[in-house]
Image: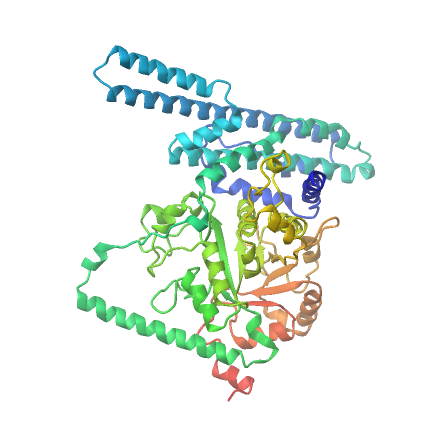
Length: 609
């Protein structure tokens, strides 16, 4: 049993290293530009990040120069990590000492006037402090910190440790890949192989022990992150709003809004009924972009984008697939959000919560943030549960923003805790190829854990060391139930890569034209590990021309293919969608469901008149 677990862990580690073709430099750029990296962490300067692109350009010019630059980066990464690690532990013990001193002072003030007995009590407090912290193990120090220090400081420390971990991991991967790239063509260039020389230096560097930080991250996560199952909804009532209008004005306005929304829902049901009569099962391939919403941010007719009502309206009407965007909150909740903040959708765009980055908000703050429609941003868990309740064909396609691998890891954790919701997710996609390949491996490992252990997660090391066998940490099942559930096959979501068809406006965008789709193969495939399932292409009119149709059909025969369009410029109607599905063979077509999606011309085209 123990041997199987070790092999599984090594298998994951090896497969993570097999992501050969992914543009790591692109992913590193995402990380460099992330808001979290730019935030001050007490070191008065940004963390050191290996200049991957600059060192890579040394390959092929001078081996001596490459080694010098690589070694210099290794030393700087080690020095920076060591400095920040010392700051971490100094911060922990300074805060603990200050908290203990404050408690002693408060107790002394409460016992005034001062007496000899008070002196004894103060000495007892000092003795207790000395005994409690004498020889304190590192993990115990973190446990005491998170239970003693206030929540704001604990969350700041949590963010600091996560950033220290991710920076060290990124630097280690960058230095490893640089040596691998150098050795790949070393023989042809007449250079020496450097793996045997430089890898001992890398793997013995202090920052390569960053995995030890995961223990502290888990300790703090368990204490700070409330389970979604235990999250209580807060009703947010704005009493001041009632004073803005008199009752009659408000009543008349609400009657108009209700009528508009009823008309829009009636249109949606009629449209879906018409679509269901069309050939090639169009309905099963349509993807409602951010749910049934108004693309112009209105809320008087349709629900707000990425709101629970937007998805429930779409699924209840008969739509099978909806697309959503997710972000990770400060307390590691996956919440639906397209923008960096909620200012565009918030009822009060000038409030502090609406201006904050989503990654800086806690779930408590998000619950208190109200959309223009009167709702709040939902948790991904809420939306998946709605899909499960509405019907078997109701599923999500989830987009994760580039440079956000922590959101991928959070998604895997959600699936581990709620395996019954995995089949509610049809696909996960992103512009970030590196994160998608990493997610592919993590989901494969999760599926293997289901089959091997009968549980979403393998047993923790504490179980193997002889802890009580009744329950496995992190698993909702006991051991007997796990044994009964072995060999469970779990179908994981498809993993897709997003691309653009126009000259990229952002550096992270992968550009491909229908006239030459060959780059897609190298983006999706790996020689030594599983590949991604497909690609989500931006619409081009050339797709529906003879050469384009041929190229698209060839691609669709090899991979899952989706097509997304730009609102206001690309066609969004049932004829275009049906041609993409029937002639090009695509599996998914995004739509904002405009009023003209099924026009009279379309009805005549399909002979519905």
